[in-house]
Amino acid sequence: MTDRLEIAGRLSQKDVKRLARLTRASTVGPTATYYAGVTAPVITAGVAIMSKSAFQSAGVPAYWVYMLSALLAAMTGVVWYLIFMRWSYRHTYGRGVELTDETAIALEDQGLSISRGHVETRIGWPAVRKVLQRRGYTAILAEGADAIVIPDRWFGKDRQLRARFRAGLDQYMTGGD
Image (tube, rainbow, N blue to C red; front, side, top):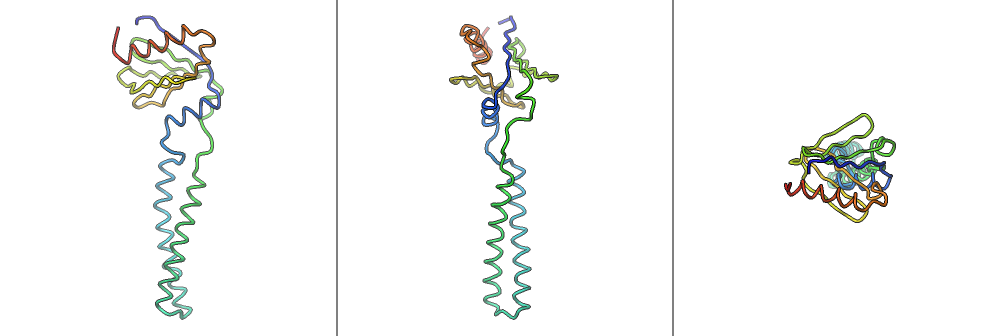
């Protein structure tokens, strides 16, 4: 294929959610998981030490000091973990310009060219890992780049253009000429 095939349009909120689901492995980011997993044990240990000292100062028998401080520390750690994970839950999708700026995607001999607003990204064909052709959209997953979603509505009623675009993707993915 030596001709440039281009499609353009704006992503809807539904498309941006689909894009995020293709890219993200979960609804909680890795930083949140790390902090929840690191801070919960630290807070638990701190509460255990503080409660042990408080119970000992109050003259509670040694058995009950350890039992109560362990129980209080465990409950504190679980509660902190749950609260932190809830605070960290991802509520919104997109970075803003996905919904406002038009996206143009072109198939070229060297690879994909994606333009949105003042940003243009080029992805060489060897970096494209997978092309998912689903009902209502086509998704392109590339190494080192965000996923790309092409809604079928960008093609309007032109089924031939959509078929040529998808065939062009297939051709580049299989390495055919």
